[in-house]
Image (cartoon, rainbow, N blue to C red):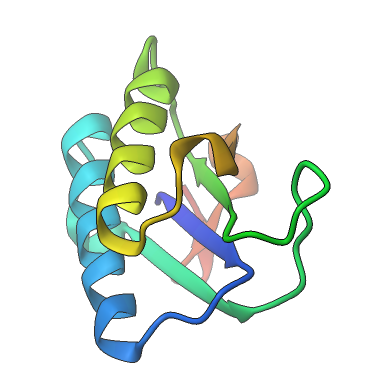
Length: 114
């Protein structure tokens, strides 16, 4: 159910993309208690992103899920930013995250909705 899209303005080697996807997936699984089998992580190709008037490395993370309970957005923000800084060296203050709690009837899968 959770889906995360990673937008970036810098190159990442294919091997590191897989590592980043695995780490982000583990964080989402742990914080949201969602089965890894339902977590989708998409890493977009490099694109022009200007953040704070600079084209230094930056990320926009979109996190959508059915159910974002209580403090889960703050925990996800903390953990995802830490992971991104550690794995791809993007400073946490160059990362925006959009969280979207999607109603079950607006999330489709396997020919139906949740």
